[in-house]
Length: 170
Ligand SMILES: [Zn+2]
Image (cartoon, rainbow, N blue to C red; front, side, top):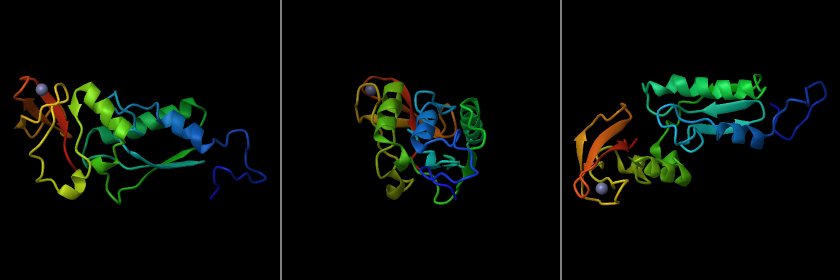
């Protein structure tokens, strides 16, 4: 395996992208469902190497999974990096804990309540609290297990009466 800093005779030095370059490209790839956050923000990109990007899909069966890989492929190709492979790693499974702090802020600004840190460990049953992304009130209730997509639940704030999507803990 060729690392980012390794150059081997015979390899093409011209298009051996630095890991930083790859990361910058990926940081510009939006999540297909929530364009406000990138695949880096969401923690979908697990590893970046010179010739390989490893991604972990979010929710199993999430219709966005294929779209995410296609978006990353398109971004790499248009940057002249068609040689960079995209691999999918299913284990360990993606968790909402992988969403970066920056990603959480972007979600909130977009009107989606980010999952609390440690949500995976707290288990799926501990989804009784959500903070309203608009007014910050904890006085909220779940309306539906399924929001605008299967990955999100629909909640309502009892303080400002606004409905909002909430990322399901996972
Ligand atoms: Zn509110």
